Each structure stands twice: as C-alpha cells, then as structure tokens.
Image 1 (spheres, rainbow, N blue to C red):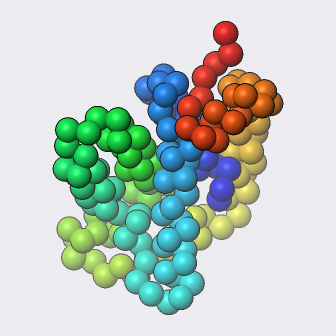
Image 2 (cartoon, helix red, strand yellow; image 1 turned 45 degrees about the vertical axis):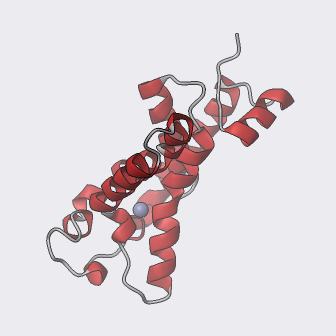
Amino acid sequence: MFFWFIATSIWSVWFVFRDPKFDYRLVAIAALMPDLLDGLFQAFGMAHGAMHSVVTSITVLFVIMIATAGRRPSRQRLLALPIGMFMHLIFDGAFSATKTFWWPLTGARLRDESLPSIERGILNLPLELFGIVSCIIAWRYFALSDKTRRTKFLKTGALQRPE
Ligand SMILES: [Zn+2]
C-alpha cells in the first residue's frame, strides 16, 4: 500500500483546501508513516498500532499547535503531518479496528489487533491499482512533466493547476 495513500491524501487535501501552497509532499509522506512505523514494530515483534490510533494524530496536532505558537509559516507547513496521518486512518479504514483506533482510551493492549493493511490481504491489490491510476491523473492534472513545476513540487511541496 503505497500509491493508494499518496493519491488519496493528496487529492483529498487538494479538494478540501484548494491551496497551491500546501506542502503536498509532507502530507503524502505523513500518510505513509503509520504503515511504515507500525509495520516495522510488528515485524520486530514489538507493540504496534499506536500510529493507527486517532489519539496519536490528535496528540501530534496539539504538539504542533503549541510548538509553533506565533510562528505561522512553520505551523502551516507542519500541519500537513497530522492531516496526512488522519488521511491514512480514513483511507485505511482504521476506525474498524476499534481497540487500536481508540488506544489508549479503551485500555486495550496494542498487539491485540493486526494492521488493517495486513488484515485486508488481497483487497490491497485493487486499491493499489486505483492509487496508481490516481497518481498518474494527478501527474497530468498538475502538469508535473514540466521540469520547473516538478522541481518546485520536490523543493516546496507546492502543486498548482497550469494556467
Ligand atoms: Zn495502516
């Protein structure tokens, strides 16, 4: 599950905020983090699932709000992190793994449930195909074959419709 989370996070943020200056790189990376981190923890037999809890996303949101008080530009950029993490939870269907989703509020132990992307099994395939197609559409929509636009995206995360 790679292109699925990149495509759904970027497109959602684009349609909600329509903000060309938003850091779309950061939101895509943040949307990949939960499976990457929890996947690693699970692979090493450690407690996993914390990144699939909505409480973790909210905590990250609050920490950023407090840490960037009075510094608007860095706040705007960093908010892409919890937004990307939220996007992962939505498009991962993480809310159906109730114990993990509300951890630690429910007092559940983290290793009780396996990660949604592992639980889904073969269903990942159509989702990932959909993700690849959506990424190709985004590439064309934001005209990223143009070197200037691509460089701008890679350096600042900004995406814009060509005039
Ligand atoms: Zn996940």
